[in-house]
Length: 150
Image 1 (cartoon, rainbow, N blue to C red):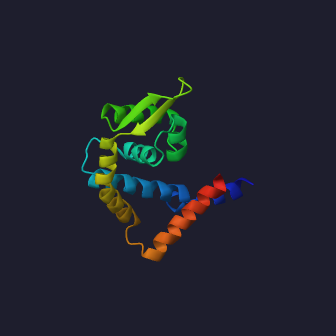
Image 2 (cartoon, one colour):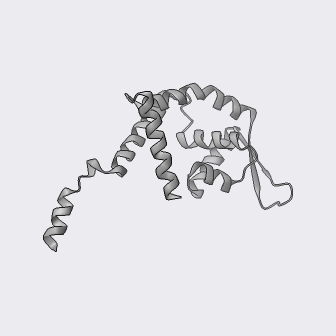
Image 3 (tube, rainbow, N blue to C red):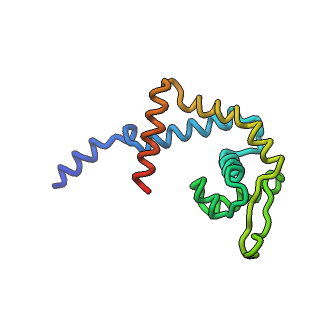
């Protein structure tokens, strides 16, 4: 039994594993973000949150966590930094004062609009040499993987 386990572990090559490949692709994507985004104060997490708030204006922290898949502890810091830059505004819910509602400000909308061409370049660079059909295929397969896990 031990020899079988040893044999299987020797067949396991990290460089061929889906998690490793996804991590490397994400690392490349993150490097492109740092390379192309001209706003040196804007992180990829901040940009994602800003887009999520813009797309769903008047959202809660829980809504942002769900939309971005960024954990609650991280979201709080990201939201606070965006608030400090006056890219989002936070107010109390109209009927439940314990809840907060987050809105994108005009400055936040402008920043997303101005960064959109750079974000598109980041996506194009992340795809690399993939042709149009391969890009559609990888998007389809990643979405399928994510839906299967839900």
